[in-house]
Length: 114
Image (cartoon, rainbow, N blue to C red; front, side):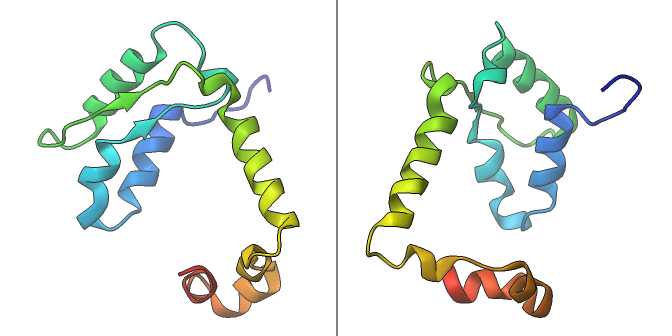
C-alpha cells in the first residue's frame, strides 16, 4: 500500500491498552503475546518490548512473549472457533449481529457472552 500511513504494531497495541479500563492495563502490559506469521521476524519481541516501553507509563512492567508456535496460532484459533460453531454448545447464542450491536452498543456483548 504505497503512500499510505498506518500506525505501527507497537502504537496499535499501546492505543488498544489505553482504551481499556485503567484497572486492567497493568495486566495487559504484562501479557503481550505476539502471534501470526508476520511476527516471525528475528528479534521482533525485543523490538516490540522496547517500543512499548517508550510509550507506556514508566511504572509499567512490559512483558512481550513470542511463542515458537506463533506461526500457526492464528490457524489453530480459527480451527477451534470453527469446531465450536458445529457443536451443540451455546457458541452460536453468543454471536452478535451488526444490527444488534448498532441497537444496543457494547452492552449486547456482555449480555450474550458473560
